[in-house]
Image (cartoon, rainbow, N blue to C red; front, side, top):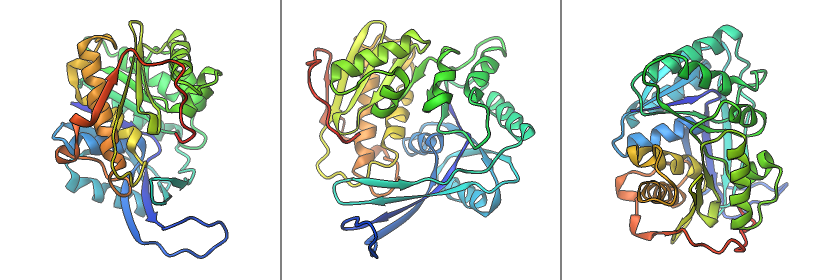
Length: 327
C-alpha cells in the first residue's frame, strides 16, 4: 500500500483552447474538472493501475465535498481531515501540443490543531505501508518544516516504518532534505532552485541532483518534461525518456511519474539506479509520466494507456546534451 499526503489539495479545472492570447476573449474547446494536488494525483494514478492507496487530505467547504465525491468512483480511499477553510480551485489553460498556463489559488490557512490532525492521520494511515509520499505546496501560514517534522514523526513510531518520498519545492523541500527522505522528485526548475546550480544539460542536472543528495536525500528522481527523467543515487545516474505521439496536457505528468516509480514496489526500494531494479523502476515511472501527457486535463493513466515499449533508458547518456526550454 502507498499513502499520500496532500496538505494543500484542490479542484483542478482545465480548459482547452486553440491558442492563448493575452487580453482576448477565448472560447474553450473542452473542459474538465478533476481532483487536484500532487499527492491526490499520485493516488489517482496508483488506483487507476490497481494499486492500493490511501490519500490523506484536509477537506473544507463545498470544494472539499466535491473533491471527495470525485475521488470515490476512482477507487481512491480517502482519509479526510475536516478543516474550516475552503480548499482551493486551480485553473489550467491548455493549448495544442501540451503547453499549459496555470493559475493556482493559495488555499486555506490551517490551524495548529488542524495541522496536527493531518499529521496524525498520515502517521496512522502509513502503518504497514510501503511508501508515504509527502506531496505539493503547503497551505498559507504553515511552518516550512512540516514535511521534515513528519519524516521524524513517522520514523519515530518504532518498528517497521515506510519509505518516504517528498515532492515539493522551495523552503519546504529544503527543510525536508535535512530530515533525510528516501526519495525526492523535483522538476527541472525545482532542481535548479534547490541546488543553486544551473540545469541546462543532462550533466548539470546530475550534478544538481548529487548536490541535493549531499544535503540529505537518498535518491533523486528528477522529472525533465519533454527531456524525460533522471534517476540519481550513490551508484550513478540513468536517463529515461519515451515517445509521445500526440501530447495533450502536461498537468499531473510529474505526479504520474512518481506514482509509476512508487508502484514498482521492491524495485524502487534501495535498488541502485544503475542496477536492474532501479532501472526497471525508472522505466515504469517514465511510462506512466509519458502516458499522462497524452491524456486531456489532469487525467491519470490506467493500464491500457501505458506504452512501456516506447521507453528508452540510457545509463551512458551524453552529459553535454542540452535540455529543452520547456520543463
